[in-house]
Length: 348
Image 1 (cartoon, rainbow, N blue to C red):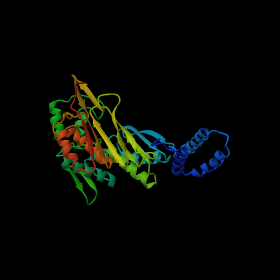
Image 2: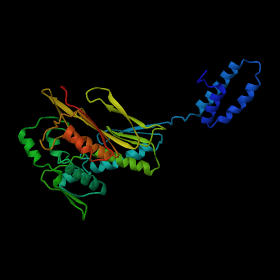
Image 3: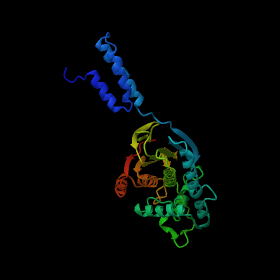
Image 4: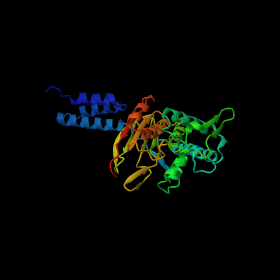
Protein backbone atom coordinates (compact mmCIF):
# COMPACT_ATOMS: atom_id res chain seq x y z
CA UNK A 1 0.00 0.00 0.00
CA UNK A 2 1.23 3.49 -0.80
CA UNK A 3 3.04 5.15 2.10
CA UNK A 4 3.87 1.91 3.95
CA UNK A 5 7.43 1.24 5.14
CA UNK A 6 8.79 -2.28 5.27
CA UNK A 7 9.86 -3.36 8.81
CA UNK A 8 13.46 -3.83 7.70
CA UNK A 9 13.52 -0.31 6.24
CA UNK A 10 12.14 1.05 9.53
CA UNK A 11 14.83 -0.71 11.50
CA UNK A 12 17.51 0.63 9.19
CA UNK A 13 16.21 4.18 9.74
CA UNK A 14 16.24 3.65 13.51
CA UNK A 15 19.69 2.14 13.34
CA UNK A 16 21.06 5.10 11.42
CA UNK A 17 19.85 7.42 14.21
CA UNK A 18 21.46 5.44 17.02
CA UNK A 19 25.16 5.15 17.91
CA UNK A 20 24.51 1.56 19.08
CA UNK A 21 23.29 0.46 15.67
CA UNK A 22 25.94 -2.28 15.53
CA UNK A 23 23.84 -4.18 18.09
CA UNK A 24 21.29 -4.78 15.36
CA UNK A 25 23.70 -6.95 13.38
CA UNK A 26 23.30 -10.11 15.55
CA UNK A 27 19.54 -9.84 15.13
CA UNK A 28 19.85 -10.30 11.41
CA UNK A 29 21.54 -13.66 11.99
CA UNK A 30 18.93 -14.62 14.60
CA UNK A 31 16.10 -13.81 12.24
CA UNK A 32 17.69 -15.84 9.47
CA UNK A 33 17.96 -18.81 11.86
CA UNK A 34 14.18 -18.80 12.46
CA UNK A 35 12.86 -20.16 9.14
CA UNK A 36 9.99 -21.99 10.85
CA UNK A 37 8.39 -18.84 12.26
CA UNK A 38 5.94 -16.68 10.30
CA UNK A 39 7.41 -13.64 8.61
CA UNK A 40 5.08 -11.33 10.57
CA UNK A 41 6.41 -12.71 13.88
CA UNK A 42 10.01 -12.23 12.80
CA UNK A 43 9.24 -8.67 11.65
CA UNK A 44 7.66 -7.83 15.04
CA UNK A 45 10.67 -9.27 16.86
CA UNK A 46 12.99 -7.23 14.66
CA UNK A 47 11.12 -3.95 15.30
CA UNK A 48 10.75 -4.57 19.05
CA UNK A 49 14.47 -5.14 19.53
CA UNK A 50 15.35 -2.14 17.38
CA UNK A 51 13.07 0.15 19.39
CA UNK A 52 14.57 -1.08 22.66
CA UNK A 53 18.02 -0.25 21.36
CA UNK A 54 16.82 3.16 20.18
CA UNK A 55 15.24 3.96 23.56
CA UNK A 56 18.50 3.04 25.22
CA UNK A 57 20.29 5.52 22.97
CA UNK A 58 18.23 8.50 24.06
CA UNK A 59 20.16 11.04 26.15
CA UNK A 60 19.30 10.76 29.83
CA UNK A 61 18.04 13.80 31.75
CA UNK A 62 20.90 14.83 34.05
CA UNK A 63 20.29 14.91 37.79
CA UNK A 64 19.34 18.44 38.79
CA UNK A 65 20.78 19.76 42.03
CA UNK A 66 18.40 22.21 43.71
CA UNK A 67 19.44 24.44 46.62
CA UNK A 68 17.55 27.25 48.37
CA UNK A 69 18.60 29.89 50.86
CA UNK A 70 17.08 33.04 52.33
CA UNK A 71 19.10 35.99 51.04
CA UNK A 72 18.40 39.62 50.15
CA UNK A 73 15.07 39.41 51.94
CA UNK A 74 13.72 36.59 49.78
CA UNK A 75 14.19 32.96 48.83
CA UNK A 76 17.05 32.38 46.40
CA UNK A 77 17.00 29.10 44.49
CA UNK A 78 19.73 27.63 42.30
CA UNK A 79 19.07 24.69 39.98
CA UNK A 80 21.87 23.07 37.98
CA UNK A 81 23.23 19.70 36.87
CA UNK A 82 26.53 20.82 38.41
CA UNK A 83 26.55 20.31 42.20
CA UNK A 84 28.98 23.23 42.64
CA UNK A 85 26.55 25.81 41.27
CA UNK A 86 24.64 26.50 44.49
CA UNK A 87 27.62 27.30 46.67
CA UNK A 88 29.23 29.46 43.98
CA UNK A 89 26.06 31.45 43.32
CA UNK A 90 25.17 31.90 46.99
CA UNK A 91 28.67 33.13 47.81
CA UNK A 92 28.50 35.79 45.11
CA UNK A 93 24.97 36.89 45.98
CA UNK A 94 26.02 37.15 49.62
CA UNK A 95 28.94 39.35 48.64
CA UNK A 96 26.64 41.73 46.78
CA UNK A 97 24.08 41.73 49.60
CA UNK A 98 26.77 42.73 52.09
CA UNK A 99 27.56 45.74 49.90
CA UNK A 100 24.11 46.92 48.84
CA UNK A 101 21.54 46.02 51.50
CA UNK A 102 20.24 48.99 53.45
CA UNK A 103 19.22 46.54 56.19
CA UNK A 104 22.81 45.51 56.96
CA UNK A 105 24.35 48.23 59.17
CA UNK A 106 27.88 47.62 57.89
CA UNK A 107 26.99 47.59 54.18
CA UNK A 108 28.26 50.40 52.00
CA UNK A 109 24.72 51.57 51.23
CA UNK A 110 23.75 51.66 54.92
CA UNK A 111 26.92 53.60 55.73
CA UNK A 112 26.35 55.99 52.84
CA UNK A 113 22.80 56.64 54.03
CA UNK A 114 24.10 57.27 57.53
CA UNK A 115 27.11 59.43 56.68
CA UNK A 116 26.00 61.09 53.43
CA UNK A 117 29.44 60.60 51.89
CA UNK A 118 31.51 57.44 51.45
CA UNK A 119 34.37 55.94 49.49
CA UNK A 120 32.81 52.88 47.84
CA UNK A 121 33.88 49.68 46.11
CA UNK A 122 33.83 49.29 42.30
CA UNK A 123 30.64 47.19 42.53
CA UNK A 124 28.74 49.82 44.52
CA UNK A 125 30.07 52.59 42.28
CA UNK A 126 28.88 50.70 39.21
CA UNK A 127 25.31 50.11 40.34
CA UNK A 128 24.89 53.64 41.69
CA UNK A 129 26.11 55.22 38.44
CA UNK A 130 23.85 52.91 36.42
CA UNK A 131 20.93 53.88 38.64
CA UNK A 132 21.57 57.54 37.94
CA UNK A 133 21.59 56.77 34.21
CA UNK A 134 18.25 55.01 34.66
CA UNK A 135 16.87 58.09 36.42
CA UNK A 136 17.66 60.21 33.36
CA UNK A 137 16.35 57.53 30.97
CA UNK A 138 12.95 57.61 32.72
CA UNK A 139 12.79 61.32 33.46
CA UNK A 140 12.89 60.54 37.16
CA UNK A 141 10.25 57.80 37.22
CA UNK A 142 12.90 55.33 38.36
CA UNK A 143 14.63 56.67 41.45
CA UNK A 144 16.77 54.80 43.98
CA UNK A 145 16.50 57.68 46.47
CA UNK A 146 12.91 56.81 47.43
CA UNK A 147 14.18 55.57 50.80
CA UNK A 148 12.40 58.36 52.75
CA UNK A 149 9.10 57.45 51.06
CA UNK A 150 9.56 53.76 51.83
CA UNK A 151 10.12 54.74 55.47
CA UNK A 152 7.03 56.91 55.97
CA UNK A 153 4.73 54.44 54.19
CA UNK A 154 6.02 51.68 56.48
CA UNK A 155 7.48 49.43 53.78
CA UNK A 156 10.97 49.55 55.29
CA UNK A 157 9.91 48.13 58.64
CA UNK A 158 6.73 46.36 57.44
CA UNK A 159 4.65 48.67 59.64
CA UNK A 160 2.28 49.84 56.91
CA UNK A 161 0.48 53.16 57.24
CA UNK A 162 -0.82 56.06 55.16
CA UNK A 163 1.34 59.11 55.92
CA UNK A 164 0.02 62.65 56.10
CA UNK A 165 0.33 65.05 53.18
CA UNK A 166 2.88 66.99 55.20
CA UNK A 167 5.03 63.91 55.67
CA UNK A 168 4.90 63.11 51.97
CA UNK A 169 5.83 66.67 51.01
CA UNK A 170 8.77 66.65 53.42
CA UNK A 171 10.02 63.27 52.18
CA UNK A 172 9.87 64.35 48.55
CA UNK A 173 12.29 67.17 49.36
CA UNK A 174 14.98 64.54 49.95
CA UNK A 175 14.43 62.64 46.70
CA UNK A 176 16.28 62.89 43.40
CA UNK A 177 18.92 60.48 42.07
CA UNK A 178 20.19 63.30 39.85
CA UNK A 179 21.44 64.92 43.07
CA UNK A 180 23.85 62.07 43.83
CA UNK A 181 27.41 63.34 43.35
CA UNK A 182 30.20 61.07 42.12
CA UNK A 183 33.82 62.02 42.82
CA UNK A 184 35.70 59.87 40.33
CA UNK A 185 39.17 60.82 41.54
CA UNK A 186 38.77 58.97 44.83
CA UNK A 187 35.61 56.81 44.24
CA UNK A 188 33.61 58.81 46.74
CA UNK A 189 29.83 59.02 46.48
CA UNK A 190 28.04 61.94 48.08
CA UNK A 191 24.33 62.36 48.72
CA UNK A 192 23.58 65.91 47.60
CA UNK A 193 20.40 66.49 49.62
CA UNK A 194 20.06 66.37 53.43
CA UNK A 195 18.01 63.37 54.51
CA UNK A 196 18.48 61.50 51.22
CA UNK A 197 18.43 57.70 51.52
CA UNK A 198 19.23 55.13 48.88
CA UNK A 199 17.08 52.04 48.47
CA UNK A 200 18.32 49.58 45.83
CA UNK A 201 15.42 47.17 46.20
CA UNK A 202 14.44 47.72 42.57
CA UNK A 203 17.77 46.61 41.07
CA UNK A 204 19.94 44.89 43.68
CA UNK A 205 18.61 41.37 43.15
CA UNK A 206 18.93 41.60 39.38
CA UNK A 207 22.51 42.81 39.73
CA UNK A 208 23.33 40.12 42.29
CA UNK A 209 22.02 37.43 39.96
CA UNK A 210 24.18 38.84 37.15
CA UNK A 211 27.24 38.61 39.39
CA UNK A 212 26.37 35.03 40.32
CA UNK A 213 26.03 34.09 36.64
CA UNK A 214 29.47 35.56 35.92
CA UNK A 215 30.93 33.49 38.75
CA UNK A 216 29.30 30.31 37.42
CA UNK A 217 30.68 30.92 33.95
CA UNK A 218 34.14 31.58 35.38
CA UNK A 219 33.93 28.18 37.10
CA UNK A 220 33.08 26.47 33.81
CA UNK A 221 29.40 25.91 34.64
CA UNK A 222 27.23 26.30 31.54
CA UNK A 223 23.79 25.24 32.79
CA UNK A 224 21.91 26.74 35.74
CA UNK A 225 18.80 28.63 36.74
CA UNK A 226 18.97 31.26 39.49
CA UNK A 227 15.76 32.61 40.97
CA UNK A 228 16.06 35.45 43.49
CA UNK A 229 12.48 36.17 44.48
CA UNK A 230 11.27 36.37 40.89
CA UNK A 231 14.43 37.88 39.42
CA UNK A 232 15.59 34.96 37.29
CA UNK A 233 18.47 34.15 34.97
CA UNK A 234 18.54 31.04 32.78
CA UNK A 235 22.13 30.06 31.99
CA UNK A 236 22.50 27.79 28.99
CA UNK A 237 19.92 25.05 28.60
CA UNK A 238 18.36 22.47 30.88
CA UNK A 239 19.75 19.25 29.41
CA UNK A 240 18.97 19.65 25.71
CA UNK A 241 16.00 22.04 25.96
CA UNK A 242 15.56 25.65 27.12
CA UNK A 243 14.64 26.41 30.70
CA UNK A 244 10.92 26.95 31.21
CA UNK A 245 9.86 29.78 33.52
CA UNK A 246 6.31 30.18 34.79
CA UNK A 247 4.90 33.69 35.20
CA UNK A 248 2.60 34.27 38.13
CA UNK A 249 -0.99 35.34 37.66
CA UNK A 250 -1.09 38.75 39.41
CA UNK A 251 -4.63 38.26 40.62
CA UNK A 252 -4.71 34.50 41.07
CA UNK A 253 -2.85 31.74 42.85
CA UNK A 254 -1.55 30.01 39.74
CA UNK A 255 0.45 31.06 36.71
CA UNK A 256 -0.69 33.10 33.72
CA UNK A 257 1.76 31.61 31.21
CA UNK A 258 5.26 30.21 30.81
CA UNK A 259 8.23 31.11 28.60
CA UNK A 260 11.23 29.13 27.37
CA UNK A 261 14.56 30.86 27.93
CA UNK A 262 18.27 30.39 27.26
CA UNK A 263 20.93 32.86 28.42
CA UNK A 264 18.32 35.46 29.32
CA UNK A 265 17.05 37.22 32.42
CA UNK A 266 13.42 37.75 33.41
CA UNK A 267 12.02 40.03 36.09
CA UNK A 268 8.48 40.79 37.23
CA UNK A 269 7.23 43.77 39.22
CA UNK A 270 3.67 43.72 40.51
CA UNK A 271 1.33 45.26 43.03
CA UNK A 272 0.78 41.86 44.62
CA UNK A 273 4.28 41.46 46.10
CA UNK A 274 4.17 43.89 49.04
CA UNK A 275 1.03 45.85 49.70
CA UNK A 276 -1.67 46.75 52.18
CA UNK A 277 -5.32 47.64 51.69
CA UNK A 278 -7.15 50.47 53.42
CA UNK A 279 -10.73 51.38 52.59
CA UNK A 280 -10.76 48.98 49.67
CA UNK A 281 -7.73 50.65 48.07
CA UNK A 282 -4.49 48.78 47.45
CA UNK A 283 -1.21 50.51 48.31
CA UNK A 284 1.77 48.68 46.78
CA UNK A 285 5.46 49.08 47.56
CA UNK A 286 6.51 50.54 44.20
CA UNK A 287 6.68 54.30 44.70
CA UNK A 288 6.08 57.07 42.22
CA UNK A 289 8.76 59.62 43.18
CA UNK A 290 6.86 62.46 41.54
CA UNK A 291 3.74 62.06 43.67
CA UNK A 292 5.15 60.49 46.81
CA UNK A 293 2.44 57.83 46.65
CA UNK A 294 2.55 54.20 45.56
CA UNK A 295 2.34 54.07 41.78
CA UNK A 296 -1.13 54.57 40.31
CA UNK A 297 -0.27 53.96 36.65
CA UNK A 298 -3.04 51.38 36.32
CA UNK A 299 -0.55 48.58 35.76
CA UNK A 300 -0.98 45.37 37.74
CA UNK A 301 2.23 43.59 36.74
CA UNK A 302 5.15 44.02 34.37
CA UNK A 303 7.37 41.20 33.14
CA UNK A 304 10.57 41.99 31.24
CA UNK A 305 12.96 39.62 29.47
CA UNK A 306 16.43 41.05 28.79
CA UNK A 307 20.03 40.01 28.28
CA UNK A 308 20.94 40.72 31.91
CA UNK A 309 19.21 40.83 35.27
CA UNK A 310 20.02 44.46 36.07
CA UNK A 311 18.29 45.71 32.92
CA UNK A 312 15.28 43.41 33.39
CA UNK A 313 14.92 44.45 37.04
CA UNK A 314 15.17 48.16 36.29
CA UNK A 315 12.78 48.07 33.33
CA UNK A 316 10.08 46.10 35.16
CA UNK A 317 10.01 48.68 37.96
CA UNK A 318 10.28 51.72 35.70
CA UNK A 319 7.49 50.55 33.38
CA UNK A 320 5.26 49.80 36.37
CA UNK A 321 5.58 53.46 37.39
CA UNK A 322 5.44 54.95 33.89
CA UNK A 323 2.39 53.02 32.73
CA UNK A 324 1.75 51.15 29.51
CA UNK A 325 2.20 53.86 26.85
CA UNK A 326 5.41 55.40 28.19
CA UNK A 327 6.67 51.98 29.27
CA UNK A 328 6.43 50.51 25.78
CA UNK A 329 8.30 53.52 24.43
CA UNK A 330 11.04 53.04 27.04
CA UNK A 331 11.64 49.36 26.34
CA UNK A 332 12.32 50.11 22.66
CA UNK A 333 15.48 51.91 23.77
CA UNK A 334 16.93 48.66 25.12
CA UNK A 335 17.75 46.24 22.28
CA UNK A 336 16.75 42.65 22.95
CA UNK A 337 14.34 43.52 25.76
CA UNK A 338 10.73 42.27 25.65
CA UNK A 339 7.89 43.28 27.93
CA UNK A 340 4.46 42.02 28.98
CA UNK A 341 2.24 44.51 30.75
CA UNK A 342 -0.87 43.45 32.65
CA UNK A 343 -3.56 45.88 33.71
CA UNK A 344 -5.52 47.96 34.36
CA UNK A 345 -6.37 47.45 38.01
CA UNK A 346 -9.44 45.47 38.82
CA UNK A 347 -11.36 45.89 42.10
CA UNK A 348 -9.71 44.17 45.08
